[in-house]
Structures are given as structure tokens and as C-alpha cells.
Image (cartoon, rainbow, N blue to C red; front, side, top):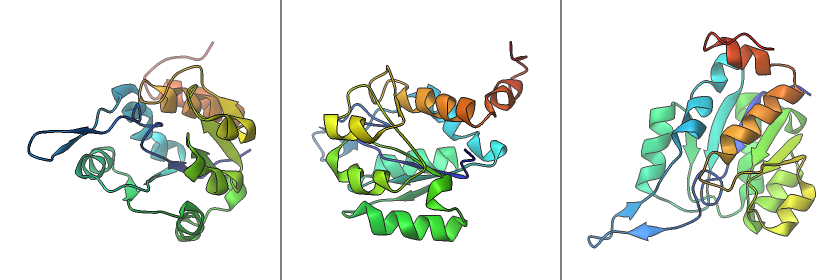
Length: 168
């Protein structure tokens, strides 16, 4: 397995699926920094990351900018968007990983070479996944799934070496 592209859902995957509105109608999202560390470094291992979400939200755009990855918001049907993304990045679907948690991810996830989800994903998503994290969405599940992906493709030691850690 050689993954060249990682596509990430937001609500329930990068976050705990809650939507919080401030009194001035601002939307608040909480992201896990451990997820961010690996997302922001996967490009060094030859893996591009794209955030793909059905909702539109300012904090998601900000987080994607911080992590230096592309974000596509408002994708109500994720399969056509996924096909456009893979074509643009020159990745086959078999070279694409998708991490999601809910029914609107199902069709697009089904097309990908590696599928992973948080522990609290819906049962239908769990059924199609190659890996189910032991961590809930928003609490480091993306990090766990990404590390498992790297292990399966033999590049986990390269990830550790980025931080001066010699693999055991």
C-alpha cells in the first residue's frame, strides 16, 4: 500500500461533532493539536492532505491554513469532489486514504484504498473501514489513524525520525 493523498472529514473526525454558536452567531470549533502535528507534516512523507466537508465554517478554513492543506467546504456530495481532488493531485483512488465518521462519507470512502474512522463513527462506516481507531473523533483519532496508515505502508519510522526518535 502506498498512500499519496489523505482526505479528511471534519465534524466527528477532526472534531467531536459538536457545533457551538456564540451569541454573535460565530461558530466555534475545537481541534486536537496532536492531529494537527501529523497533518502538518504528512507532506514531508509524500502525502498531500485535503480537508473535505459538507458544511461551511470559518474556523475550518483557518485550521486548514495553519496546517498548510487544502480545504473544500460545502461539498454536499463528496464522491464527485473526491474524484476531482484525486485527479488534481495525480493520485489514484487506490492511493488515497479517507478518514470519516458518518453516512455522508460512506460513498466517497468506499472508493478509497485505505479507510479509517474514529471509535465513535456510525456502524455503517465502521463496516467498510480498514482501521477503526480506539479514539473518538476530535480527541486524536486522526493522529491514530494516520500513524496506522504509515505503519501499514512502512513509513512510520520516517515519521518518528522527523522528531529524532529512533524506531525500536
